[in-house]
Image 1 (tube, helix red, strand yellow):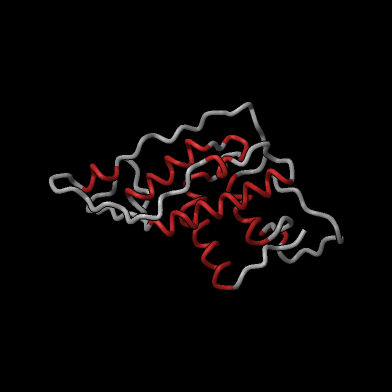
Image 2: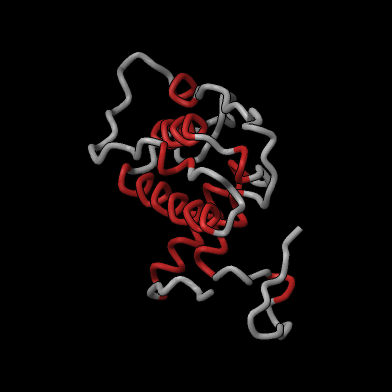
Length: 169
């Protein structure tokens, strides 16, 4: 397996999206437990506040939506990562293929008379189990699509035999 063929700036941008949005939201969530509903709620939440502030924003926080184009990039990154996970047999269905990508229109401005806190309230993101699936986390697949299937920060300088892939636990 080869590392995704990406330009340096694209790779850096993907790493930023993984670090800023995917890992804080999905963290150790197993890829098999991710579903289209959860992804669509995640995208809607980003359209309300790019800081992912939740239902209780910090004092003085003013919500600003993440741009639609950035939300779509996150969707395409997850779709590619979960597509590889499906090809490798870690998940049976690519949830990002089933999820509706955010529409390419600009987010609506905040309506007058509503506080910033009202705009931050997001529906609780369920973490329901889908068929008792197991496997590496969503973040693991997102990182692997950027760095390749054998990438592990703990093994960065460790040579490995040709044709083998270390298993992350």
